[in-house]
Length: 608
Image (cartoon, rainbow, N blue to C red; front, side):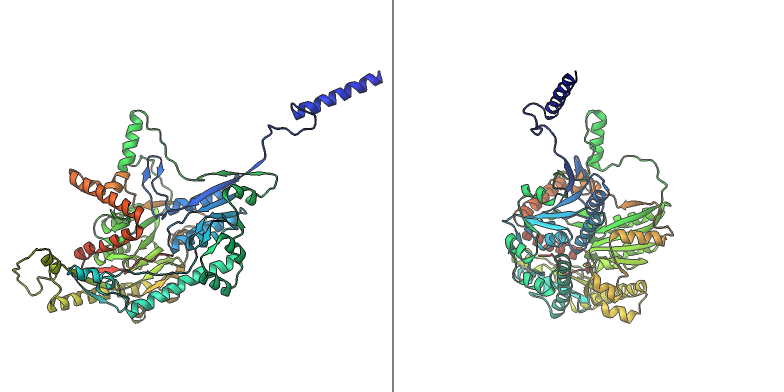
C-alpha cells in the first residue's frame, strides 16, 4: 500500500510540472507568458510653443502651447504609472525664456525621482541646452551636435530702398534707440554694435554655464568644444557631450531601470484631445461652435482666481490679429484693455499677472494698455517672456513687481518716429502728384516727401515729450531717481539677468513664480486653492485662418485675399524661412505709415 501511494504522488507531481509548463517537454519555459514592463512617457518638443490660450482644432489643439506642454511634464512627474520620461528633441524654435521654462519643467520630473532621457538626431544649441537638463543624452551614430556659439544677424534695407527711390526719414530719442537703423543704414552704428555685443556675452554665458554644470566640464573645455564645433555623435561622446551612441530601437534597452523588464512608451503623453463625436444635430452644432470659437456654458465659478493676461506680439491700436505671412501675432490694445477690464470687474479675480512677450510697437497703444493696468485696482505682477522690450517694457513697468527670465531681452526704453517717403518710387514707375497745402507742417504725414525743416522740428519736439513720459513713468514705477533711470534708458537693451542687477526688474523667475507672488500680494496663502483665468480668449479656427469675423462679414474678396496670403506664407515658410522673415520685416513699412511714433525693438534675435 505504501509503494502505491508514493507512485501516485510522483505521478501527480509530474502532471503538475507538465501543466505549469504547457505543451512540450517538462521544464521548458512558457512561450505565451507576457514579459514584465515598465512604462515611460514619451514627449516630443518641436515647433514654437506660443504663449497664451490656443485655439482648438477638430481633433485637439491646432498648435501646442507652452503652458500645456509644461503641464505634460508636471503630469508625468506626479503619475505613479510612469517610471521616466523619454524626451525627443526635434529642433524646437523657442527663445531664451521658453528654454528656461522647459529646463525647469524637466528638472521637476527628475526631482520627483524619475529619470529623463534626451534623444535627438541633429542637435541645435536649443536642443542641446534642453538635453543638458536631462539625466542622459542619446544620439544615433549619424547624428551631430551643432552647438557653435551665438550669432546675431541684422538685415539692413537701405540699399533696397535706395534702388526703389524710397527715402527713409527717421528721428529717434536716445543714442541706443536703433529701431530705424535697418531702414536708414547699411550696417550697425557703434552704439548698436556695443549693446548687441553685451547682450551676446550674457547669452554665451548662459550656454557655457549650462554645459559646465550638466556635463562636468571645465570652462576651457566648453569653450574649445564650441570653437571646434560642430561634432559628430561619435566625437561628441568622446568629448563628454553625450552619454550613448545608439539608434531608436536600442533606446529601450539603455534606459530601463530594471534589467528584467521591457520598456513600454506612452506616445504623445499628456497631449490634450477634444471630444470628436460630431454625429447628429448636436454634434453638428458642437462642430460649428468649435469653428466659430463659441465657448460652452459652464456653471459660475466662485473660486478665487489669478488672471493671467497674455500680451504677445507687436503692439498696435485696435484688435489683436495674426500676420498673414509668418503667423506672428499682433497685440491689439483694444483686445488687451478689454481683457484687463474683464479681470478688474471679476470679483473672484484677486490679482493680475501680465505675461509679456513683445518687442513693442505703437507708443499710443502701449500707453493705453499701461493705463488700463494702472486703474484696474488689482495687484499686478509682470512676467517677462522671451522679449519685453520698448513698448513691451512700457506695459510692464506699471506692475507692482516685475519678473524676468534670465535670458529675457528687455529695456530699449526709447522712442523712434518717421516715415518712408515714396515720391521717388512713384515717379520712377510713372505716378506723379500735385499738391495744394495750407499750414507749414501739412506734409508731416504725407507718404510722398521726407520731413521739411519745420516738420522735423515738430516731430523732434513730440518724440522728446513721449520719451519724457516713458522715462518718468518708468522711474516712478521702479521707484528710482529720474536721472539714474534715464541713463539706463536711451534705447539700450539688456538681458533679464543684467536688468535685474540694474533694478529694471525685481526678480528672476518663471511665470509660475510670478503667479505665486501675485497670490501673496492678494493676501492669499501659498497653499490656498486658486484657479487661473487665462485672457484674452484665443481666436477661433475660422478667425485664425481669415482674421476677425466682424471684419470679414460680407467681404468675399477679403476672404480670398487672406487665403492667398496664408498660402503665400506657407509656401515661403516651407521653401525658405529666411525669405519669410525678410517679408515680415518689410511689413513694418505699413506699421510706420500708420504709427509715426513707435516704442519698438530694432531686431529679432534667434539662437543659432
